Length: 312
Image 1 (spheres, rainbow, N blue to C red):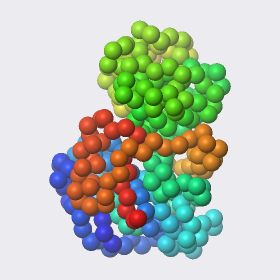
Image 2 (image 1 turned 60 degrees about the vertical axis):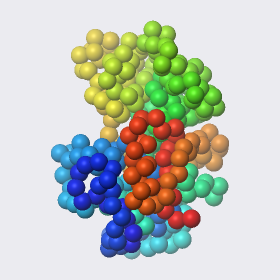
Image 3 (image 1 turned 90 degrees about the vertical axis):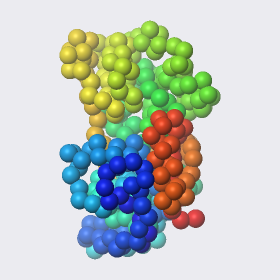
């Protein structure tokens, strides 16, 4: 099969097109013929070697952890899926990623794609949707009427988080540039703070939860707007335990646990019209396409999700 692989850590030029063996599946897995995948920051962070201590894999490595496609093969212990099913998944974090024509996926990480969902939409949801869901629902336990701040609302995780918080009935504030003002309002943001001209930490107070996607100074300032007992979760840094104690809040960093069950919940939100992925740019499944997609992701100015179309 065709895949885009890396044979060593480094810049985007490490992404090379190769013919590799089609993967074999285990009894509890299916083989998904991928129609679309997407780019996430973990992809280029891993490519650069930032995660090599945490994930000490051998080369070659196929990056990518979002899959939307059709089941081509089913392991003998698989009960709820069959060949020909349209599915989407955030596969397990292995060196056999989704920049490839086929990927093995554990049955419990799969969900059926709704009929009306395109493969591009299916590829845009899993990693960012599960991240937003686990941060807001599992960790922050957001409920109707809560006040929630979501940083970078026009980004992949931010755009999902606004819609999930909105579907719960929370009041949602977000930070965005003025060019994304209309977009984040259309997703359900009640208040938009133009981060280039305004300081969110001087404008907001008594919030129940913050989802930080930026790290650094933004993460540190986020403590100031929380009420006592509030919750702060960051996908971009390690919140200070000292500051959490000082402000009497609960704070944590985040690592995603892939889940087919939670993907089904996101599929239901899609069907009800409460969750629609924002698709930014779509790139071809070529060496150049992946390199350009990585460059855009690394700029931190991508709007919505960056998609790679693998099959037309």
